[in-house]
Image (tube, rainbow, N blue to C red; front, side, top):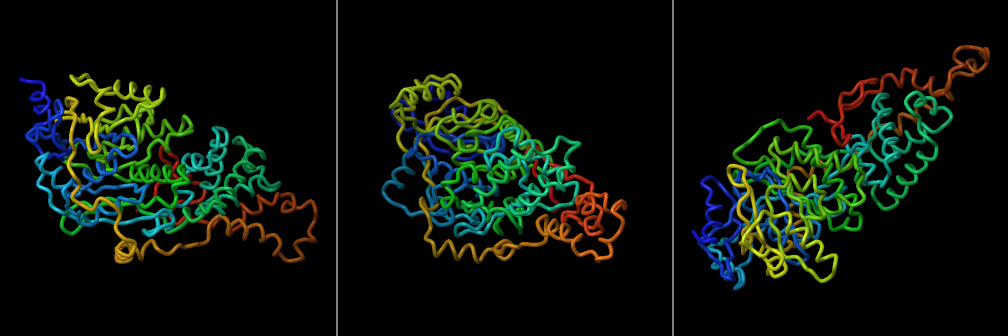
Length: 506
């Protein structure tokens, strides 16, 4: 058996699979040697990498289309604003027809069912919001760029708010609690569990102020988005493609990358264990993945690693999309069983170093990968995936298929119409600002001022006067009656996940 036949045999799966393209061998495309990914292996995670302009986005689109066609919901982060076309049929031309003929693809213009979202409503899509409580201290620390000590202090603040029934819905709620805990009345509250230094509180408050000044307040609030919406299928049985519009927040990379991680962590809370399933429940594409890992704390990286490792057993596959495998920490990279590596450039010493590091992440093969990776054309990639029995397939240089949906954005009017006709629009479009920590603390502080004048004439040695303001507040009937909408009672802390995000009642 020749080398090319041996590679082709490694992709001759018997069960359902996604078709990526045809094998390239010695400069020739072999249309009968199809390169594929077994459908059950899509929850073993993956990496799509390559330099700018090499076709990563089209690869995402190609995989997403086939997943949807097989009834698997897909989540796509639309960083550049050109993925919305997946909802519309593609347009044929000589280039598309030529590619289809080369790789033995029966190309048919097809649009796929899609929902369009936007962070906090900045953009055309259905607003995606999270409460501060739901987001949690670990992810919020990443967004605010806090150090480890400040992150621990923020966790202490969340702990206090949980135990006292103070709902942290938006940024003003968190600011109110921090301000209270650093006031003369509030300082004793945390004294026995480490306290909150004035300097650390000042950093947190300044970070919150700067964050809000950048227009970030809209991302936190209610109604908070139920991530189970991402698991839906269309009436015809195809998986729903959820497209999160991100171009409007491209200059806030830590925000959108951390929001994507919040979505994944929230899904992790709620999904039951399924083990090895016939197909994934959801495949999540994490574009511009390097932004998630830049300047991340060790605790944050450990949480990502553990989430990626464990969410596989809940039927969710995660694909990280970035320029080189070096952008992803080794412990996370080790979890990614499916690899599609587009061309790399080697113009500088750093590029050369990244190229050599990338080659070392692939199994041994008969290819000269250093030469191959710098010579790949657009829409070509080096592929290795997990076979049906979980073993790595041979490395295969592949000419990829063309997506069947529109390779570009749909027009703004069509997008707006799709958003407003969605069944989810009425549920999430309008922001809600209900009573939460800010209002409750303001009311509690005012309470002593509203007591009858006679009370102020009581003996200075009375027990009531000996109490601090915070004791009066915490002991008041108003404070005791506070209850979370999610069912948490005073004195009972919310159970939190690896990222500190709160579990919600569905």
